[in-house]
Length: 185
Image 1: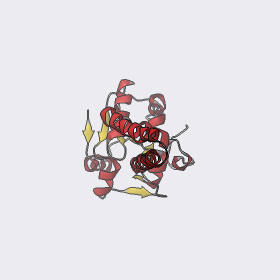
Image 2: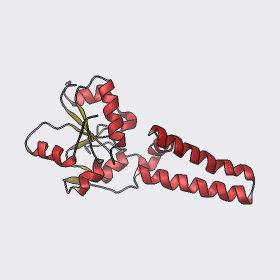
Image 3: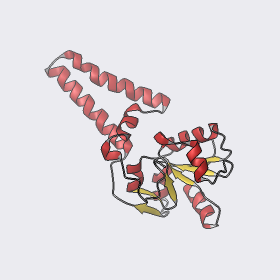
């Protein structure tokens, strides 16, 4: 897989290279902080045909994907490559690395990252299932076991069902008016 550091990508931008930087995080994560010249195209609604339209019909010009840490960006790259895009590049370290490098970002209303939301929800379900199993009925111990199995599956497949579910929750939705987002277009 092709990848690029945030610093190298920004250097190319400053030198005038045409940069198509797609942030594949949820709209709420994008709203909180994003690279200055990125466009929000959430991974769960990534449509290669829409991306091609955003790139003026050219599937061969470089496309850069950025997410929080790099995992979703890699998945977006795989999806676009499978759809015939010739040059798709993942930004290593994602928005977190972009920020740490001191590169220009746009800040908005902060939200809890999807990764933290998954950890909070999984932890609460384990505590709740354990307490109910101890105090109410031992069958409730199945809940923390199911959460553990789900987290193991997520780690092995690099696909998190709980994260996909949480991404659809109302607090993770953002209106797509003039914020640089192409969500829903």
